[in-house]
Image (cartoon, rainbow, N blue to C red):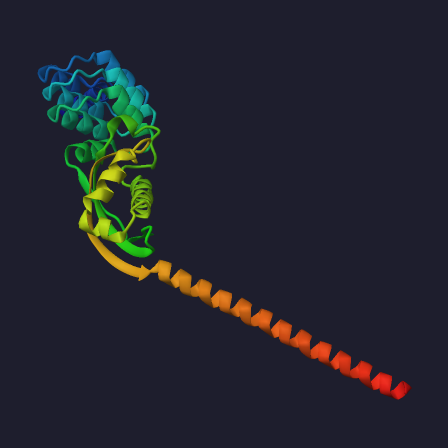
Length: 283
């Protein structure tokens, strides 16, 4: 009899434990209490509904706690909606916290839009705080006096938060190609407009000034802070080479015309000889 009672008690205890586990799994009282102690206002019913919608309630609550402790005012419904839209909730919260500490105007709506656009919003905020230096490849251009110059520049940029959605480039970093292409075009234009290569060599900041005035960062995910000319080398005398090529071409044309005249003279002489022989034959 005693053994039967013990077995019954064990069975009842197991059932109670299982029921309690199921209760606490579907009704996350512990998670709700943790949020309450951390100053996060979220209802127990909402946590239960998150489980039914297959949203990790622990993730949402932890990110709500992180944001709240940092002074952010977050809405759990917005975080849940962003997760269901395949967004990176922790990355967005990190970006918002960093932006607030750096006094960057960034709200949850913009941050979530940037994240859903496929960009790393946290890296963008970091890059906005800490500008990045991009080195351009050697850019060749020819001044008006025909001398080729080969310039290298260092472009200091920072992420333009407002342009991250719809700006050139898929992610911060990939838009660098657009910036480099525009800076290269600006260098070619500025050197090409110089009367002499010596003007550029004496005043390298002339290139920087002209390029910056063009507003090359318009429509990109970056804001150009400065353009510094790192190195300028003198290349070929393109003007002289073109003149030599033109002279050779003129020479070849003149030789061809002279050969043509000589051939015509020979042909005319042969024709006259034939006519003379024909006249003698008639006589």
